[in-house]
Image (cartoon, rainbow, N blue to C red; front, side, top):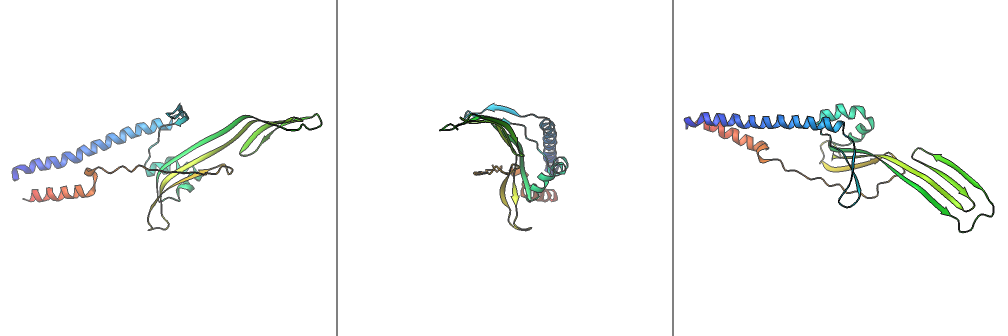
Length: 211
């Protein structure tokens, strides 16, 4: 049995070393991706159902990086994430809806000739208009919002059971979410990364060495 001890020791060192190298490569590649993501721009394309899709690289951060690079610079987002015991994903995006022309014709013309036009700008919408005896025309009707989607876990109290939740928040008070479905794909942890595998390997290695 003693002649196998050097092989066992070498094997016990090679496995952690291999995992460490894999981890370092992962961190290096992840940092490269993060640098690209920080400077990435939105890409638009027509998807398989014939509708335009906006796409961008996803920034991957650990908890400390999230705090330093994002939350410390965004007070509103920091307040929204504070409701979660653990945050998995954050998506922020801006949308604009614009309709060029809306024409409303009166069934019966107003019995006088007139014309009025102007422009209306509010916090969350804007448009131009023109009205005469035949009807009213609205042009460049525009409304906008910033949306924040956060997926993570919440607790009702400090030691309570965690529940997976997705929160959607719109900055525009006139926009209401009327339908929402959130799905998270759970990726199983590889067997060789489970704590009890390493515990068993350590106990077996110690027992063999002692023999």
